[in-house]
Image 1 (tube, rainbow over the protein chains, first blue to last red):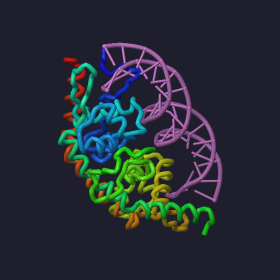
Image 2: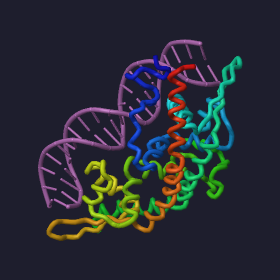
Image 3: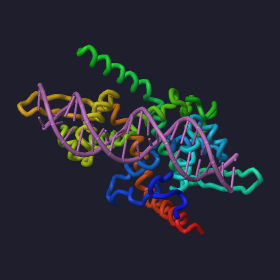
Image 4: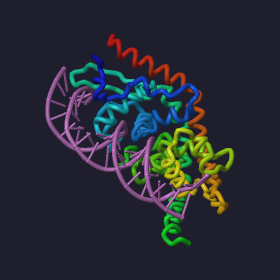
Length: 137
Length: 137
DNA sequence: CTGAATCCTCTGGGATACTG
DNA sequence: CAGTATCCCAGAGGATTCAG
């Protein structure tokens, strides 16, 4: 009996077969892990302060409850986020970035900076490309 | 959708207006663009030197021909990669990173460095998590 | 050699309903 | 409040085929 689900319909892919060979590109490994639709946003949102589930869900508005759960589980599994349960009358769970998770936020910031600085250039290039394609120069 | 960071964006202090929004969050925009399965690898592979299609395909081994074509088109559209056709008897096309593309390689390297340095820790955390889950205490 | 087009599969992920 | 379990669909991407 697996806690997360049967092999047929796994909520989380804790499947051990996903690991590539030892010599694989680490970038690929990392991007495969946190390059999904929500991980980075959750990490970012948790950076300022720990949050509870619903608070987090509100902040990362747009995320479905399922994906928030899945994403948090993944991040927890990676040791990037810690999960603390308070067995109060209304159950509350606090999620917070670990030091490890905070360290990941650094390189992500670099990418974010690049993105912020070059977004317009990117869009411009796209527009030009599309225009040229249409007219055939 | 809606911004999840409110007005406060504590992580990227260097970038005002760095908000997680589908339309205004540059990180999301960039990741949506080059956060696919192959773009980064192609950029990486092209970083040392320009390459032709098949050579590139060999280097990024594992990529399908279709995805290489699609990926290159996207990168070209974004102005990250330039495409030069040599109308020789056996047609050859050279792809090379633009200066713009090279600049993107920088932040990606930061992420890559983090990945390389923390891969074992990541795996360890995953293994521990999975083990704990499996035993169910 | 370079690439476009088609087919088809697999999985990410949203909506929803149900537990404790 | 904090999840968990199903259903289901869109889209990414591999394999294959055709074309310049």
